[in-house]
Image (cartoon, rainbow, N blue to C red):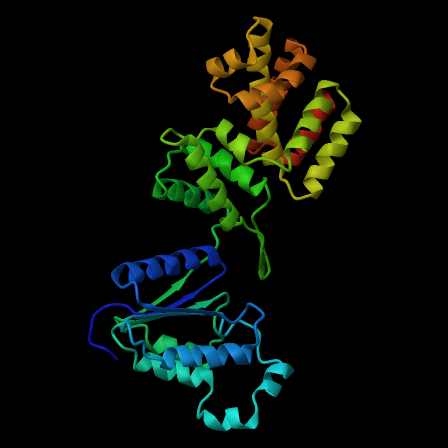
Length: 360
């Protein structure tokens, strides 16, 4: 092993592929900034390509010495978690190819690591933990005290961890957002879906989508803080129609229709807290808009006075006109009482929503 005291052997594993990809992308960028001719290769054993073909390319890339650079970075994804050799792969390995190589790729990789050059970096990314009985697991365990080696688990942020992830990423990307607005954004991004572990299956937020939505919000808001209205305008989408249909049904006191919509939302995976939060938010806006409409203000004037985005004002104006102001206040008071019952633990969200519809 080399004497240079810097980490250049990395074993990352876990279900958070996004964060693993971010780290590797940063390492690639850093290496290219230091040497634009650096030799960088990335092999994904889970992408459906012939495993035999990938093994050959991986071995060739690691053996090759670049004429233009001594710096090398190699990424090997899901070598142990990816699909094993198929019948076709075996058929592709003709007798000559098998005789020409002394070891299989696992042997080659482990030997390569043990003799790695100080100018080389190698990343192993696995979507699953290694079999503790396997040779690779024991090999990496043996490297734990080596100063050149880093082993790290990347787990998807569940529950409130996702809120922390959002807040940290906004700051990292140069944006601004308050904790209350982070909570609201988290609900929108997850569409209120329950974040639970079901055996080996984890139902969690899509970090790729979340990062993309944050990029849009930060660019849109420029140097100002991201608000709930910004999030609602740019992030919400597919659930909007159902939320507004529910609002409309509540306004008409059509309990059967409201219950049907609510049941449909819950069956799709939305939780009661999400639905109630959205209703509280929309009815609060409706009350503000209704009050200012009665004073004769235009949509633009309402937007400026309330700091609600013009598009949101325009979208809510028709609904606001269809309600009597006293009905809006009555519904909002019932929503507030339901929200309080849930937060104090007196009632489950689904039951609170059922009772809410029953009394309206």
